[in-house]
Amino acid sequence: MARPDGRRPDQLRPVTLTRGWSTHPEGSVLVEFGGTRVLCTASVTEGVPRWRRGSGLGWVTAEYAMLPRATNTRSDRESVKGRVGGRTHEISRLIGRSLRAAIDLKALGENSIVLDCDVLQADGGTRTAAITGAYVALYDAVNWLAARKALSGQPEKVMHRSVAAVSVGVVAGEPRLDLCYDEDVAAEVDMNVICTGTGDFVEVQGTGEAGVFARDQLDALLDLAVVGCLDLAEAQRKALLP
Image 1 (cartoon, rainbow, N blue to C red):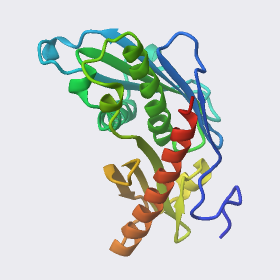
Image 2: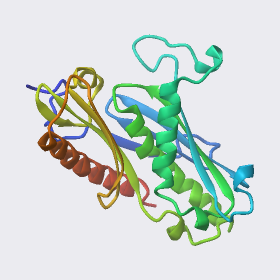
Image 3: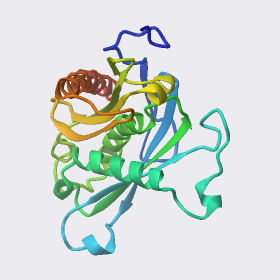
Image 4: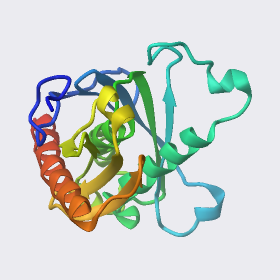
């Protein structure tokens, strides 16, 4: 069965990482996975939350949101509703966990970096695009601190590994990489996989949306995801070249 956009089962959508997209943050990138577009910004503040003061460790956290018209129908802003939804909380925490795997908090010193990931346009894979883009924004924020001699360690020690993420799933019985929205809603199995630049796993989220899945299907999906994340790590590397 052909994919909606004609890609091979093991092919990523076109990926673009545009650094410095926003003027004010210490790090920013517009990340595009096909029709999905997420603005990731990294904001630096001196000091850490009260519960971490005096530890010598820094802190990295994240917030995720979708603009009201990021999808084909308008949704109310969560600030207007007066509460943040469970899905938003879950994705924010996932992004924070994933990016903390890329950084040595002791070498960061008692500095805090907040990663804001705002979905401008959604076509599947918004959380994986956010993680992939947030890594680049975080890298630039760390270099901003390094230029001001505000780190406890060398910049290369602070960002000691890269992190990227991609979705995979089983659609019409076929394992596929980087699902667009039409595939995501039809998937029998849906997974989000976060990997380091060497192919090690940071986190794996997998669900049988329309039943169960076998071990060989899981292995096939993980293999697809690792290859996809390695390609994304190369895209990150190229985006970070001077």
